[in-house]
Length: 481
Image (cartoon, rainbow, N blue to C red; front, top):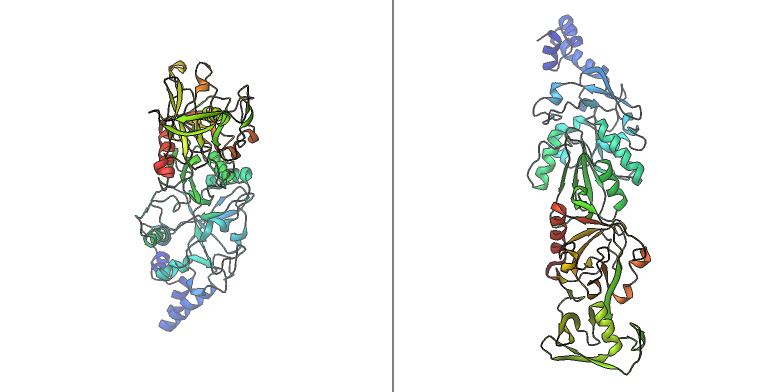
């Protein structure tokens, strides 16, 4: 250990030692105080008034820098007091990403075309400061920020991977403005955060070594989530309801933070898909109330006086309705009587079509309750040679992100849960029926140019993606599924 290291270990300086040799102990103490006043802080001698001067720890200068795409250069810090095992800025992953010195002026500088350094360097939970007082020595404190938060702190030292910044910028140019809600975390701060949440501590988080951020992106922000998935398609992505975690660790990884609650489109793995374009038609629930019994239907004209009995499989009478409604009920497969009962097609027996009363809100198909906008009817007969089966999952990009009548957003997935007589004998695998719920919403698909007049891009989904989609449907719709 040389003289300088020995003195620094005990908080002394060479200037202080000189004074001590000339003036004894009083000179030594005076020299230490004088040295502290002369030592420049991380801003180059400009100490922010919001932090006591004695709080700022001066790390050793290395003279080496990291340069970001914007041209910003940050000095590399190599100080065992900061990065040693178990210290504040320890890197448990041993990535080699250097610790960088951040001045107060640097916070407003761009690291890429659209991202400022302060977006990665902000400490999101200042309350942890009071529990870990020493951490105050490593942060800048500001009274007011552009985003309107008061009293937030920013790290004086940070790790930040340049590849992470570049990929975020790529996503930003595709989607527009993004908000980073969690960027860099020091090793000790990260552990304290997990303790506060009361969950298992992930001490090797990629946030600690500067390779990860969490970006605010709710399920309805389709464009932003797609842009992040695309930019980080060869990296790691974690999905939550209100944000997406992205990082640049080696290898492609995907996970969700909750199996029961997640945005369904995040479950799509393109390796589990096979393109199969379709020409869809639409079906819906016929309603007896307000139904016009007069007019043409199926090539026949009705005067409104024709009547037909609706029968159960056992031959019991359900109700007598006008024949035109009966024909419409046969065509659509489900119908709602004026007394509120929901009927579903139950096959043919002794030359008569039969119906059953359904416990489902919108009737039931061959594979269970039919769910509006998520159910497909397809030809599952032997004539299609197993091409379509109940439980098959389709992904239709044209539907992904569309607003549904109830205000929710479609995720692009639909499931084969029904069949229909019009498919039998057709021999066309691309003809499917999309269920639109009530008749008033019957034009939902056609108004979005999804109809049998042209090919609509679709993908049959298999593998783990199919399992995740079906499980999500079950969790979402419960007994109806």
